[in-house]
Every structure is written in C-alpha cells, then in structure tokens.
Image (tube, rainbow, N blue to C red; front, side, top):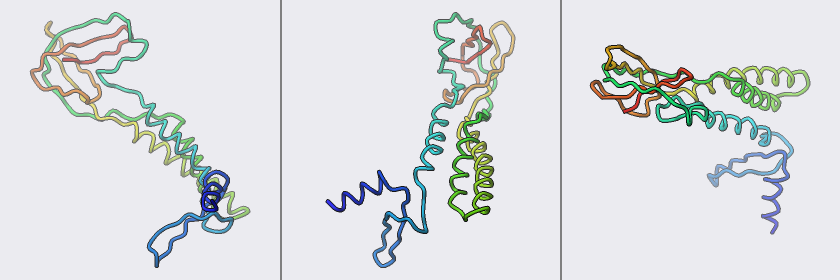
Length: 189
C-alpha cells in the first residue's frame, strides 16, 4: 500500500520529479524530490500535445482527398496521357502553432535554470530559441513528398499539376484531370 501511495503522489500530486541513476544496480528510478535535478513535467505536457496536434492537422494535397467544400460539387473532367513525372517537395505549413509551442517549451526549460535576473534571461532566451525551433519543426513535420505530373490532354493542350506522391504515375498512363470550381485540380487514373 505504501508503494502505491508513493507512486500516486509521484504521478498525480508531485510537482517535481528527480531521476536517480544507480551504477551498481544498473537501473534508473524516478523519486519525488524538492531539491536539485528537478524536471517540471507538467510544463512540457501542453507544448508536446500542441506539436502532436500540429502533425495531425496538416493539410492534405493528395489527389485522393477532398475538402468538405468540394464534396457534392460538380467538377469538370478532361482526359489525357502522362508525358512526364518529376518528384518534388511540397513545403510545410508556416503558422503560429509551431513557434508558440516551441516558445512555451523553451521558456519552460529556461525557467529551470538559475535564479533571479539570470533565470529571467534564461526564460526569455529559452522562449526565443524554442520559438525559432518550433517554427522549423512545424515546417519539417508538415512537409510532404509530391509529384509534378505533366499531362498531354486529348485536345492537344498540356497541363502540369503538383500533388502529394500517394499514387504512382508513369509516362504513358491514361489519366483524368479533375478541375473544381474553386480552381483546384487533381490527376487520377
């Protein structure tokens, strides 16, 4: 019962956790503490969750995915043959979510350093570094591999469409070009 109470305090009521390494046992343990070697776990929870949500909310540029607005909308269809396929990178999103989450995490890490004015400087520098890192992380997480597909239409025109590389296309493939009223287009077999 005492072991459960200790674990319960550690996970539900403790504000500080100390990780202790024992060389002779070759194991690690987490102990409740109010002294040095402190990690504030609750501070990292929200920034980490924001980064996970960021990855889950990335917008799709797939030829197989339609937005809600595109559902039940008449679209024009043209036919042709693929004459060229190039691999490309579709850049990641650049929103405020990555810098905010990174800034919060950086400030939380900075708050564990020093005391007084030094601690304030560490929080500010940690927040700035975290914001810059969060912006880079957001773009890298949401970046996608894509295809630039050139199609010779049956009427003689040529069309180039870039979309996610989730469906293989080869030269000579007979394809459909589906154009929506919003200007979006996609290549499908």
